[in-house]
Image (cartoon, rainbow, N blue to C red; front, side, top):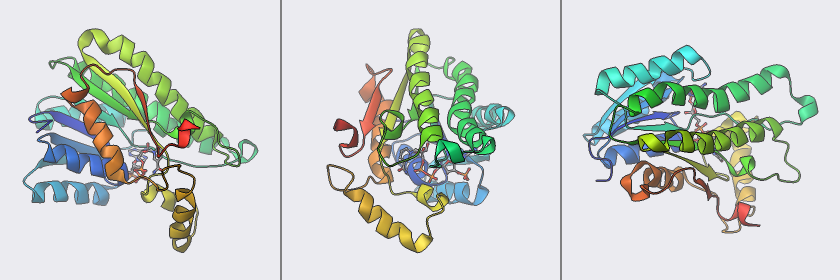
Length: 255
Ligand SMILES: NC(=O)c1ccc[n+]([C@@H]2O[C@H](COP(=O)([O-])OP(=O)(O)OC[C@H]3O[C@@H](n4cnc5c(N)ncnc54)[C@H](OP(=O)(O)O)[C@@H]3O)[C@@H](O)[C@H]2O)c1
């Protein structure tokens, strides 16, 4: 098992990529804390883990509030006795033309995607420093690396480009403490995120089909595709990797 006895905190662990990562980490022997705003979703994740004899807790919190980021870390450490791995996965997507973007929408995206990840790091790092090395994995996106004609994603793209540079800056700052910081950047992954975009629910499968062609490899990603990459960066398999911006996108950013 790749994470035997390690303590991992995953934001947004109630759904999608975060949930798949939580289940995989638990199968690999980690004690897993998941955090998010919806208690019912977090409960489903930890029930699934506990059903397979894994150890998991959930913490309800909103990472756009700095006080919650501190409490999420503190509760994890209090319940499990430390922290080795932080996965900054919680995020929101909204695509809008800049001329149609209201200040509230900009703040909502930035406060969760960038500020939330920043302050999760701020509060987790002193705890990880108490251990014998550790790992932080941030979730970026192909849209944080490259622009796509016909898509209006300026606020989201800017927030995730911030996450990418946060990764690189922290990788250097934390290398002396044996804390590795890496970023996984997916393209379209089939998750609940697409239910938040205002696309009618019955149209989502059609839209997903259309996006398949967007990927040179001919399919969208599955949450498990991303979870395996996050596991790689969380485990000793990647002990020489820090500051990596790892595209996992069916070839979208290759061309
Ligand atoms: N799906 C894709 O195509 C795709 C592509 C590239 C990158 N990503 C990134 O992958 C990450 C995971 O997204 P996903 O696709 O798995 O979508 P998802 O299923 O919607 O997951 C997002 C998670 O973040 C949590 N979250 C959102 N705002 C939060 C807040 N303020 N505080 C705490 N938790 C919060 C949500 O839970 P609550 O609503 O209960 O808080 C949810 O569990 C995101 O960072 C996203 O930007 C996704």
